[in-house]
Length: 191
Image (cartoon, rainbow, N blue to C red; front, side, top):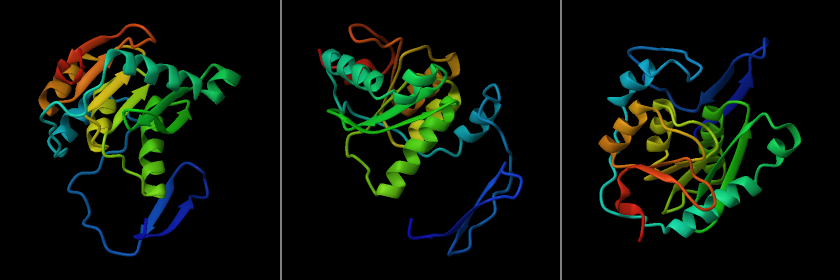
């Protein structure tokens, strides 16, 4: 945050410019997307994500997963009003640290990253819980947030499962208070 000099919404309201107090090397290729590009962006970006999780930490019990899912549902204030938004939350394996709601599931993870940055809060144990489908882009964002466990109330795509295996992320889908499916790296689920 100490590198952010200014933040401005452009006059048309469709772009936000962030000015830093230092120069930044321009990317070799630039691609603007909404995050729903059918996996093409994620495959290209996969090579640029330098994260790999090994070991079995954090470990989480099935009961704790149910508790985290329930806590996510309880944090859905805007959803209760509108019924038309997604929610994501970051947990420290015990409680919800931050929750964010948005019409776009991808945006909820961006908001979580922003909350961590603005509050300088990076829990040692990081578990992401979301209401959105886990696409390759969502998995990539979880990897960049350095969350070795990603839980969703719905399904993962086949590419996100492949990426989760490659990165060592425990990917859980169809999570409810009392049941869930594990798609990759089940060693973090304590029996």
